[in-house]
Amino acid sequence: MKCTLMPYKSRSILTIQEAKQNAGWQVANFDLPNAWKYSEGNDVKIAVIDSGCDLEHPDLIENLLPGINLINKRKPPADDCGHGTAVAGIICASNNNIGIVGCAPKSKIIPVKVLDSDGNGTLECVSKGVRWATDNGADLLCMSLGAPTKLQNIRKAIQYAQSKNVVTFVAAGNAGDKNQIYYPANYPECISIGSVDRNSQIAKFSNLSDNLDFLAPGVEILSTSPNNWYSVVNGTSFSAPWVCSIAALLLSYVRKTNTDIQLKTADDYRRLLKRYCINKNGKNTFSGFGLMNPNEFIQSFK
Figure (cartoon, one colour):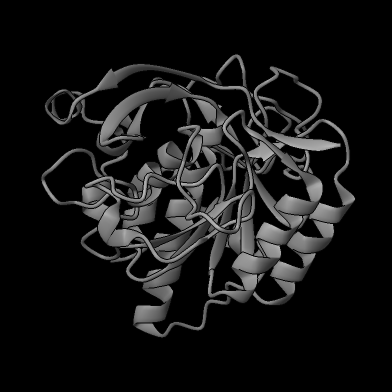
C-alpha cells in the first residue's frame, strides 16, 4: 500500500517580481508582522516530511538544515514534485526582501524526502522519515500526505515521535468528505487541519469530521516553487504548515521567556492553540476548534 500527497492544485508560476506584487493574503489578513515582534519561530526545527525541497531557493536557503532523501539515499532531498517546496515556503520563507515571507520566518526546515516525483511513497518510507526526523533534532513534524484507510505503521512512528516530545501536524485531506478526515490526521497523536478561503469560509475540498482540530488558510496561497519560482496553491496541504508555523511561534516564545507552559504532546498544543480560535463554544464537526484569531494570539504575547 502507498501513502500519497493530498491531491492539490497549483497554478500561476511567478517570478520574484510577480511574487512581490501578489503578497500572500494569509500573512496580510492575519497581521503576522505584529506577532513577529514577539516571536519569529527562532531556531525551532520543523521536519517537512514530503517530496523534498528546493535546496537553493533564495527564500529558503538560509533556513534549511541538512535533511535526508529516503527515496534515494545517495542523493540530496531535492524536490522533483514541487509540493514540499510550497509547504516549506509557507513555514519559513525568509524575511529577506527577495520574494515572500513565511509564517515563522526564523524557524528552520529539515527536508525529509519520502515521496517521489508523482507524490507517492511507501508506508515504510514515510514511517522511516518520521523516525529519522525525530532522531535528528526535529521539534515539530509537518505532513501533508495521507490516505482514507488506517496507516498503523505510520501511527507507530508518530507515537514514537510524541514519546520524544515531537508533535505532528497533518493535513485533513482534499476529498470534500464531510464525515471523515484522512489518516494519519485522524489519529489523536496528530494535530489535524482543514482549509478556509480568504473570507474565512470552509473550502469545498476540505475534509471534515469530529476529529478535525483546526482550520487555516488553504485557498489561493502564494508560496515558493522549485527553480527559484513561486506559485499559487490550494489544498489542506498548505493549511497544515500554517498551523505548524503558529505552533513554532509559540514554542519559540515559550523557550525564550522560560514560561511554565508545557508543549510535549498533541494535546498540549491543542490546549494552547484553541485559546486563539474564533469559535469559543468548543469543538464542532465542521470547524474543529475553528480558525485561529491572530489578534488574540498577539495579545497573549503582551
